[in-house]
Image 1 (cartoon, rainbow, N blue to C red):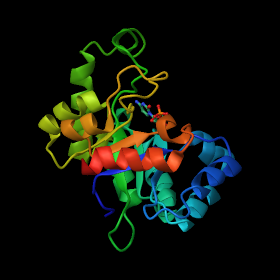
Image 2: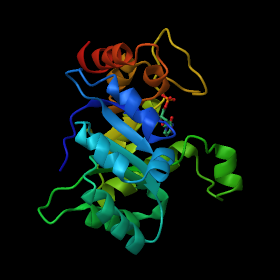
Image 3: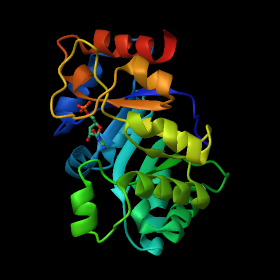
Length: 238
Ligand code: C5P
């Protein structure tokens, strides 16, 4: 299985190959190659070759495609992603335990290795009102998030994507080895942008995040390499 060692993941929310490669070129001479998140826009626009190209440059890859379909389809799709040699991928826990188990089967290579697999519990864009009104889920959001995290653990997944504010309760419910991958990270002196609940890298470390996903504080910085190194220092070293 891929390494669960704590790390900073850079969200490469770029629209096309040219933009992402010119961003990554800045790290060409850097000793540490960032762990990179590729999302739906870039993957669907540029195709699977973008994964091969970024892997070829020495980066680890979190492919953020959030699968949610019937178990058979998810099993077969995960087999394709595993063959692409991504390091971390994800799905919606709402697909239920059998779907998550099928995903793990599909990811596992003939030699027994596989990428890490984490679940999205509830999207942070879903609030209590929509949980109840649209989805007819009447339990409090926190209970739903923890229950979905426990389902993911039951299915054998490695962790969940969650707010840094939920990392402590997820670890309490699912164990310290269950990974928490947390976006919503900002430098103490930086712009919050559209994120509502944010933490600094150091705070995320203290609260027990295993991986932080950081986009604009690095990608929109005038000096992305320095911003990345600052993030690494605050999250991993201070
Ligand atoms: O630019 P920023 O640091 O806000 O980027 C955060 C990344 O994490 C984006 O790729 C965003 O889509 C993702 N994300 C998030 N909140 C979630 C789940 C994913 O910000 N709840």
